[in-house]
Amino acid sequence: MNILVVLRMIPDSAGELQLAEDGRSIDREWLDFQLNDFDDHALEEAILLKEAGGAKVTAVAVGEGANRVLQMAAARGADEVVALQCEEDAMISSREIAASIAAMARAKSADLVLCGVQSSEDVFGQLAPYVGALLDWPHVSGANRIVANGAVLRVTQERGAGVAVTYELAAPAVLGVQTASKAPRYVSGSKLREASKTPIGRATPEPSGLERAADIITLRLPVQGGSGENLGGNAETVADRLVSILAAKGMARN
Amino acid sequence: MKLIACTEGHSSKIEAFSLEMIAAARSLSQAGDKVVAFFAGRDAQAASASFGVADQLIAACAATSDLIPAETYARLLRDVIAVESPSLVLVPYSANGLDVAADIAARTGWPLISYVNEIKRDGESLTVVAQMYGGKILAECAVGLPAILMINPGAFPEATPGPIDTARVRMIDAEPALTSGKVKMVAIEVPDYADVDLTTAERIVCVGRGIGDEASIDLARNLATMLGAEIAGSRPVVDNGWLPKLRQVGKSGQKVKPKLYLALGVSGAPEHLEGMSHADLIIAVNTDPKAPIFNVAHYGATCDLFDLVANLSDRLRAGSGR
Ligand SMILES: Cc1cc2nc3c(=O)[nH]c(=O)nc-3n(C[C@H](O)[C@H](O)[C@H](O)COP(=O)(O)OP(=O)(O)OC[C@H]3O[C@@H](n4cnc5c(N)ncnc54)[C@H](O)[C@@H]3O)c2cc1C
Ligand SMILES: Nc1ncnc2c1ncn2[C@@H]1O[C@H](COP(=O)(O)O)[C@@H](O)[C@H]1O
Image (cartoon, rainbow over all chains, first blue to last red; front, side):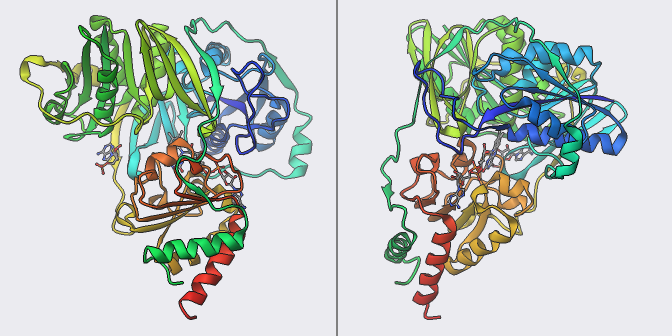
């Protein structure tokens, strides 16, 4: 089985996000870029599938810091790593890159394309259904367990309230991974150093073929706070206040 | 113009957000417009008993399946789009919608905006507000029609449920599409809520990724015990195996409405807020003053959660005379 797994680099949104001067994007200059969480799970699931039944895993990374993440992917067990060139300092739109991923899936004779279920920059739509539709392959998003039995895949999908639905489909297919069957593994420094010698292939993007016809006009920060009260940042005074707030509601004793 | 509101159901039930999609379409429709509710499910009873606010219901039903896979749903919807030529298709941000919206967008070439909270119509074009970066940024987007929008559950109030008369219902047999579909549903697992049911809990202490590691969960658990609260977690905490799945709050976890919700190190991504924003009293502790959890919190503190837990635990212990 040939597995293509897509790794998108996105800004660390736990940090402070500032708007760029054009008002239509965020200032990427000082941001930390990290692997999209869900893509990390997709990579793990690809490696788990390889370990379970044998597979060749090709990891393709897009965005700032792609090389670093590809070395990590190689250290975790990816057989081939490729960086997809993208416009510098632009947010990664899955709608834009879908055609490139589809072309690569064909070129690599992929049986399975895995990516994260979403990325927080994906305002124009999600990658798995775009790639699935472009290839006319079946696609399932929100996958949290994938079992391959030859070309037959069993995919479990999360619904609300902890309900899980399992589907059967035949490869080739595209899956949007929510959670890997096991938490993503850590790799040792020595493995990472060893993997740093893995040659990184380059791929040039294909035109998306889909007209955008929708555009971001402005970005803004949500109005902060709403009607909530800010108790500040001193843990002792906050604790005092919380005890009296809770006591007033009969949920604690002063 | 025509607007299609996509609705969903499982077994003989409809998903509550279906009524939100219809309300959103209704709020955009003007004189002469038509709101069409598209439903795919086992039978049309619940849909035709509830979707009266729509002008028409197109129901694709297959009695043999409790759930129509998204692939089949999308194919049925594509056929409906081909016949109805709508200007706008509203898809809920749900497990199903995640596969349907971009599939349709890719096959029609229409624009798609996801995670939409607000829609303004100006004649034949729209301005929508969508959430990005876990709710930390709002994007105002211009959308030319025809278009697809994926709507956040909870962004629009539910339409009042009421029956739609049979003259306004068009039934489609979904069986052929279901049998020829490439994605087959083989099992539905419903968890045993006997262990813990957060939906009935009166007090909840929820830990997010900020808790850092598994060992620290105990600190929060002790605090929860002192408060008579259940312990819960955000998705990454549960994904890491630090808390069982039934203790996850949010879109793919439990939807809770306790009297007290204490969130420790939770950023407040839209998928988390979907499960808890209606709690009576929300207290959030997060070192990042820009964390979106503060947008729904009644009280917010920007101190370190470990300092807060230690201090609060001390005071509660003292208060209980121990
Ligand atoms: C289809 C789908 C379904 C999903 N369903 C769910 C769901 O059911 N439930 C859910 O929760 N998520 C769900 N998510 C994931 C969601 O998008 C977020 O990724 C998730 O909620 C983030 O969890 P978090 O807030 O714990 O982590 P983060 O976003 O990483 O936030 C951690 C926070 O902790 C703060 N922090 C760190 N250290 C400290 C400290 N010492 N003291 C105080 N604060 C600190 C940080 O400032 C940060 O704000 C879903 C996503 C998708 C795509
Ligand atoms: N039989 C089912 N098939 C698919 N999804 C379900 C099923 N039962 C529950 N769910 C999901 O779990 C959520 C809660 O369902 P309920 O407990 O019926 O309100 C729903 O929104 C569905 O997404």
